[in-house]
Image 1: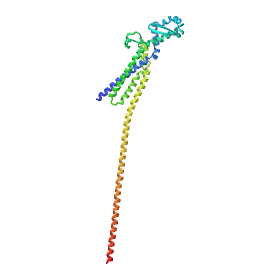
Image 2: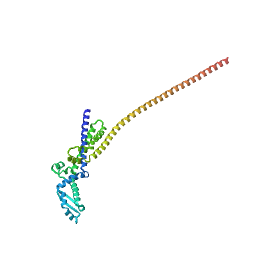
Image 3: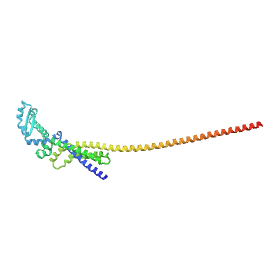
Image 4: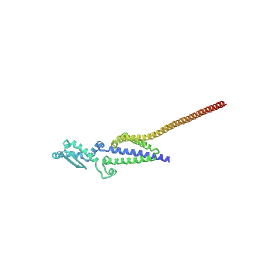
Length: 309
């Protein structure tokens, strides 16, 4: 039975580490794909894509028309190449370059928040553009996987608690595994930089922009869980030590009580002996008095007999 328990603990600990590691991975990708984080990294790729779609050419060619339109209107709308751009006339009045830059920024936002009618992996297979990988749809997909990893980790911690002999050690092991599972994310960008293909590396590192944030978050949580586990273990040891000290002091108090009891008994015995001695002395005194009285009577009788004669 002990061997089965030990094997189960090792098995579930390994699965828990894997679950925690995957959870960290999914959370890293999810945080890295947030719009505020990914937008600066998408400028170059979005510009190339938009140029391929001919949006910059379209904006340049229609610039004079935009200026004329803005004499009476406040917003100029372009609906071309699958993009629906609403350009403020205040931007148009700043020049054609400002219009192109604004068009690129708005195009990035539209591509990021674009809704897809297919599942994530189906969209990757059936769509030619790479923006599916760095879209809000992708962020939600990886975030949902993170929650699945959390649920799996909770189940594994519960199983670990069931099979481990010292229940208090379950939290300690969980905290230690969380710390170890977070360490690879401390230098993951450095690891990715060792990859030979530079262009591939630049694209791939986008998904791990927030790896250090995940490392710090999980490290802190792991340390807290570890300290709580150690506190429970120490608390258990403390209770045992407290009970031991109580037992020792109780022993000493019992010994002191026994000594006091013996002393009281001795005092009681001594008092009884004294009482006996006192009684004996009184009896002797009474006997002496009776003897004296008897002698006096005898003397008186003899004197009376003499006087009669």
